[in-house]
Every structure is written in C-alpha cells, then in structure tokens.
Length: 146
Image 1: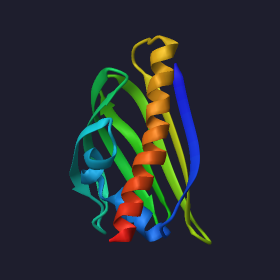
Image 2: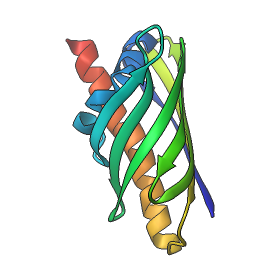
Image 3: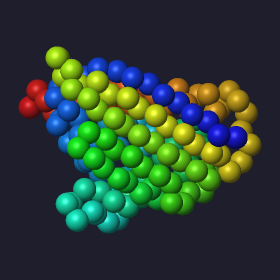
C-alpha cells in the first residue's frame, strides 16, 4: 500500500540556510526525532551527500535504510536503495525564496513491505510531516540566528 504525505510551510531564513541544513544529512538525528542515526556513505563530486544510511523509528517500527540523494540549487530528493520495512521511498524538499525567508514544500511517498493497520500508517505520516515542518524550521531558524 503506497502512502504519501505533503506539507508546505514558511521559514524565516534564506533558502541557502535551508539547503545547508538539508545537505548536513549527518545532523538529521539532532533535529528529526524519527532519525536515530544518519551516516553519509558516499558523496557527489561537489561534496553533497549521495548515498546515505539512516536508522528511522516511526510509530513503533524501526528501519535501517540506504538512500540515494540528488540535489539542485533549491531541492533535495532522495530515493530508497534498500530497507527492511519499506519497498519504496521517494522524498523531496523544494525551497523557494519569499520576502521574509523561504517557502518549503515537502513530499514523502513510501511503499511498505508489510501490511500495517491504517491508524499506525497515519501516525507515521503525521510524524513525517510534523518533523519536516517543526524540526526543519527550528533547526534552520537556529542556524540563521547564528
């Protein structure tokens, strides 16, 4: 069963700071509650994370995942290479400038390997969206303040 979640929000910091936080994949456990570990396994030629291993716990389920990241000046995309609990995952952050900082669009699509009760799936979706909005916003604004 494919599950998707999407949210949009504004951050009081320029897009460059938002992208800096997203590119600092190793810091994910510091601002994203579900992320227990994050390790960059390889980098693109420009030094941006390419292959990343994460350990994620959401709605009582823990999963080790290997993800492939691609980057543009204003976006971060990742796709699942392998995982224990998921058969597919596609996530995207798109960051655009606003008068007061940045507008962020977050989309996450996952396909579970096992059937899960709808309530647990919805809880995990809400956690992903809340982390994207609250966790990323707090970390970006903290870094922007210096």
